[in-house]
Image 1 (tube, rainbow, N blue to C red):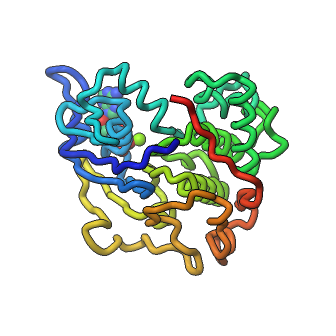
Image 2: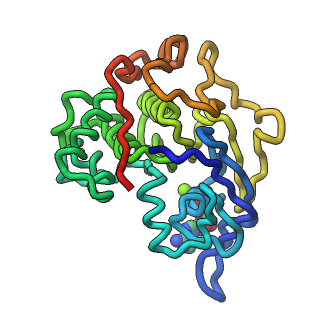
Image 3: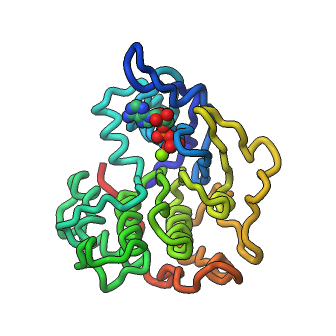
Length: 291
Ligand SMILES: Nc1ncnc2c1ncn2[C@@H]1O[C@H](COP(=O)(O)OP(=O)(O)O)[C@@H](O)[C@H]1O
Ligand SMILES: [Mg+2]
């Protein structure tokens, strides 16, 4: 079941390399993502976005600072404990899905469940329900090479969500897609994540994508140089006309269909593609991973 907790970073400092050749990557970053909230991380290449994501997710240990999640300081845990926590509490979506090319979509999406000890039949059954929910019914048996870029990213989203994570981390998840496909994928990602009650931390270069999130931080040289939580949104971050803001929901619904986006982004005018609608009317059973 999804763990509801704030994810908080205190004064994260991270440097790569060894004495002599040191590359500063994070120079004291502090922030909080509330339970079910969404954070967009923006900034130029090399500003520390990926490093921040990896520290927040317990992939990397910072040199100093704390990452607090569900009553624990991730930076104080052993590598083994952090690996276990990542599997149970977090989901990940990368720029290109990093799907295993030889596995069909359902088995790719089922992998985290199988790693957590769920039997293959049950895991693929849960994964297939997620794939259908994300608009991929009928494509369960396709290998990544037989899917479009947007479809492959939906498989990656299913894989990130099957374990009912508390936080989904996405590092430029639409960076390899054209803009319209990217919006469709982002819409599916933000809505599905919100419907499960998970928080979302997303690195993006797209101000419109950031506008869907409840909070945006801009990074430069390893620091947060602008934060919408501190005041007005930076110019250019307005949501498209007629498109409701999917971010900012701190108490997401238990039943995604009751939160069907009637009047939501899929119904909006403007740049939103109609095809992005997930199958909200399908029965939805949020899978629970045995711990
Ligand atoms: N594994 C690494 N080894 C050495 N330097 C790295 C490594 N990863 C990132 N860096 C450096 O750390 C800084 C921040 O990188 P990164 O977090 O990847 O930024 P962004 O995701 O914003 O492009 C950059 O100067 C980058 O070159
Ligand atoms: Mg990066």
